[in-house]
Structures are given as C-alpha cells and as structure tokens.
Image (cartoon, rainbow over all chains, first blue to last red):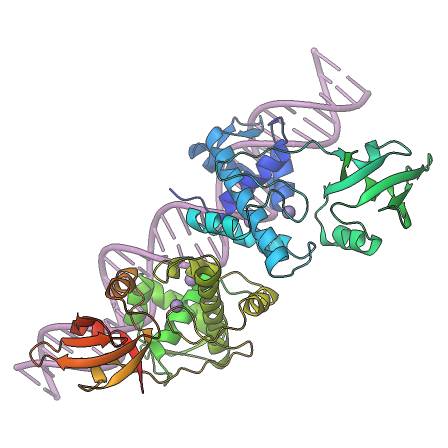
Amino acid sequence: MQNSFTEENYLKIIHSLSGRDGAEVSTNALAEGTATRAASVTDMLRKLADKGLINYKKYQGVTLTELGEKVAIKVIRKHRLWEVFLVEKLGFGWDEVHDIAEELEHIPSEILVEKLDTFLGHPRFDPHGDPIPDAKGNLTEPDYLVLTDVQLGEKVRMMGVLDHAPSFLQHLDRSGITLGSLIEVVEINEYDKSASVQINGGQTLFISLEVSKNLLVQRR
Amino acid sequence: MQNSFTEENYLKIIHSLSGRDGAEVSTNALAEGTATRAASVTDMLRKLADKGLINYKKYQGVTLTELGEKVAIKVIRKHRLWEVFLVEKLGFGWDEVHDIAEELEHIPSEILVEKLDTFLGHPRFDPHGDPIPDAKGNLTEPDYLVLTDVQLGEKVRMMGVLDHAPSFLQHLDRSGITLGSLIEVVEINEYDKSASVQINGGQTLFISLEVSKNLLVQRR
DNA sequence: AATAAATTTTAGACTCGCCTAAATTTTATT
DNA sequence: AATAAAATTTAGGCGAGTCTAAAATTTATT
Ligand SMILES: [Mn+2]
Ligand SMILES: [Mn+2]
Ligand SMILES: [Mn+2]
Ligand SMILES: [Mn+2]
C-alpha cells in the first residue's frame, strides 16, 4: 500500500516536530505545520494510525511508529538529495530549492533515489547543512550548537541553519555567511543579545538575536 | 489557477491522440488512454472545457485550445527532458524511464525546467527519439517513416519508436537495434510481412511485422 | 474544587476524480 | 425509414482530504 503525498508530508512534519527524543506531537502543532485546521489533522491522524504509521490515542498527541519513522526518513533522504542536485548540478541558490524539493521528495522509485545518490557522490549533508540519511535509513543528527550559546571570544564554524526561509538564507548571503564560514564572536550586547562577529578573520558584522538563534555552529 | 496531475495527463493524451493534424479525439479513446471509464472522461472533459483548455461539444469529441496545446507541450517538454536526465546522467536504460518521467513531468517550476535543459545541453531528442519542444513551446515532429513503408534493398537509419513499452524496448536491445542504427532491408516475406534486415552492415536479423510497425526510420 | 480557557474531536458538508447503471444520442444495418 | 448497435452522457454514489461549527476533553486559573 502506497502512501500519498499528504501522508508523507504529515510523517515528515511529525518527525521534525518530534525531535531527536521522539516526543509527542500535538494536533495543533501539526495543524500549524501543515497549514490546515485541527479538525483535518485529527482525520488524518486516524488514517495514519490505521495504517500503523503513528501511535495515536485521542487527546494524547502522536509519535511515529518504527514503520512511520522509516517512511519519514526515506522522504527526508529524497528531499535532501534532490536539494543537493538542485544546488550542485543545476546551479540553484540554497534559498531557492526547498519548495521544489518539497515536490520531488514524493517521487516514488527506490532505484531513482539510489542512482541520484550515486550521481551526486553520496553527499552527507544538504545545502543547508542538514544530514542526509543513508540508504539503510540511518540518520545521525550531528550535535551542533546554536550561535546564542557561544561565548564571547570563541571561534566557531557555521554548519547549518534552523530557519530555512528564503528571506533568512538571502540575509545570510548578503552578510557573507555561508556553510563553513569561520565565525568569531567579538562582542555581545547585554541589552538585546545582539552580537558583533568576525567572518573568516575579515569583515566584522553586526548580528541580531533573531539571526543568532537560527545559526548552527560547531566549536574548534 | 494551477492544473492538477490528472488534468495535465489528459491534455498530454489528447495531444498525442489528436496527432499532427489536431483531429478530434473521442471519449472512448481517452478512456482507453487514461485507463478510466468513459463516464469519468466525460466529467473531466467538462472541467477542462470550463477551464478553456479544450474545445468540447457534447458527443462531438474534443480538440485542444491554443492554451491547452501550450500546457500539453510544456508537460511533454518536461517529460522528455527528465527522460534525458535519467538516461544520460543517472544511467537508466531507455526501457526504465517512462514511468518515472510520468511523475517528474508534473513538478511545477519553469525555472527548474530551464535549468535542467541547460544542464543537459539543450537536447533536441529524448532517449526514444522523440523531439523535445523548445522553451517557447515549439514542437516540430520530424517526418520519419515506419519501417513497414521501406522498400526491399533500402538502407535507413533508426530514429525512434512508436511503442514505448519496456518489453518492446528490451526486445530491441536484445536485437542490437538502437537509435542511430543503420538498417538495410534484405528480405520481405510476402506472406506475413516479416522481414530480414542487416544492422549496421553486420548481423542479419529477422523482424516481425509487429516490430516493423513500431520502428521509425529515416531514408539515406 | 469549581470554573474558565484552551485543545481536540465529532458532525456534517464540500470538491476532486473516479465508479456503475441507466438514459440519451449518434452511427450502422437492415 | 426503421431498427439495432455503439458511443456518449447523466444520475447517483464513494473515498480522500479539506472545511466550519459544535461538542467533548484536558489544562489552567481562580
Ligand atoms: Mn512535500
Ligand atoms: Mn534542506
Ligand atoms: Mn504523468
Ligand atoms: Mn520518451
């Protein structure tokens, strides 16, 4: 039995909202994430539960079953591989690929995914720094920290983003911050938690808390 | 207003059944082509007519409007470009790509198509020899002939296939006939119209009428 | 603990694409 | 021209996925 686009999208969102600890996801959170009404979410949850893809008890929120997790990770793998394709091969910007990948991720065909993966050289990360699950379904989230957790004077490397919105990514582009950039925190303003950072040992840049909260970085 | 997968598939099939002369297509032919019932076709025809994509008068059959033709050709362009991608870049066989392209052809995004086209080097023909419409929507069908129309002793070049079924394409693979092969008709059996042909000046091959009817070739 | 607020589910309805069975229209045959 | 056959449309219905409004349940506040 095949899963529909809609079902796959639900599974992906449950996975993402559930976090690494597999916490329960609320109906309202899903309504928000799928841009539908809570009543529609409830309908879909009953269906996903019937298919054995989620654990669902009324009013209790949901978690993915083993099967649901497997399906979700497959979709995520496809999404991120297609994003790599779009950026690396077709020359799209990292701010342009999300919506297109949102469609491509639902193309069935295991062979297609594996051939694409090979064609791309088995990339480990997508253009936003997100890890790509391997063919067996293993997904290991590297434990990056958010830039707000970095102390004054520390040097870190930019590894990913939490916000994938084009506007945010374009803002980073204009600021000259890309994946791999070296970031040194040279000043933190106590009042609004804004900061000054030096990028790649060169230009110094002013960064708002909003931006800091969405930058994933790695120490050393 | 966007067109659904289903609507796009109908337009594509109408285009194909309508032929180069834009002849009327019957409800039953469409039921056959879409693997649905005639009643369902009628429903869809009313919708496509309301959207201005087809000319439809009850009991009279349908033709594409200018707009419908434009949309159909866009889908065909995408289908064929994706097929080129699958064969040229991912290493699929020409017998494996149709169903996947049938899905990929519905991914929206004009930019995607154009970037894909550029990436592929603006191919003129797909892996089955079918012409790829250009970005402006011009589609020129080369006038090939079917192998059954070739006289004894003539040498022709294999340019395409009418049947796209994997089983037929695999049969050609086993026979050593590919796009561009030189075919010389060395014998025609009057009784069943089967033929013997010489491929690329080498191996001589026995070919049934069924095969001949599905091979597109070009003189000289 | 009682009440208010927030969350979630149920009830009933809608569109889309499809179905079967019956009615209508066109085309072919006598 | 009448009748039979084939093609097409209409009528009525179904599942998927969505909606609004109302009811039920859980959580927060008094
Ligand atoms: Mn999606
Ligand atoms: Mn991404
Ligand atoms: Mn299709
Ligand atoms: Mn083709």
